Length: 256
Image (cartoon, rainbow, N blue to C red; front, side):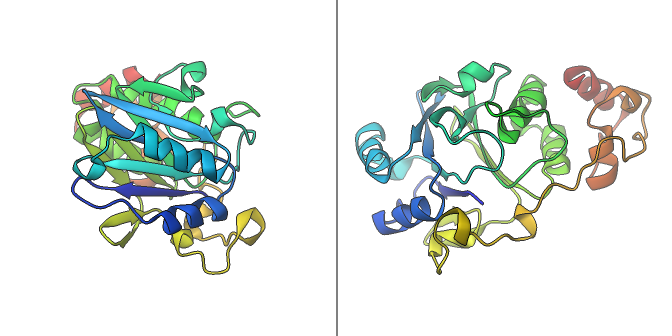
């Protein structure tokens, strides 16, 4: 299942009990990220609760209330149960950099759900493949990941997952359905711990089901460039496409 916990700027961190419950319900490793000095600081690979608790205390700035902070607690669906497959991931094209347990990046990515149609392996999860093949090219476009066209593409390719994107300038984007509680956002209800403990007890929902995509299932979009765009199917079937032919050409060129 996994769960993402997002504490917005100005909000108070969830209680230790809540975070520990998240870890116990999603026990395959944890990580967190926050913006600092124009970069996103990523820490992950905490395979035990004590290690995560210690890292939160020592790594986060003393007054984290003024910062957005995102935490991820994993249940593995693709990729091995190992530190490098934990979230967050740097948005880049280098899988080795994504596996780093301590890193600084222009943007960081967390994912709750499953994504079909991506090339995965024991060392490359669906989240990592999405960050490399979709998010990294979009980050290079005009406006970065916060651009209107980029947001539409992410929405159209999310397959019902929940995403969180954080940039070094402290902007945070969330996609999908979230649960608000105590000033924070949670990507599902497992933070409540209602009898769901670990992988066997995890209860699936619509948003944790295998993705909707199947390769080659859609017609191309409305612009000439759509015929060569690997995202054309997702856009035409699941959400809004580019606003004009120029935008479509740029998107197709960046993602091909």
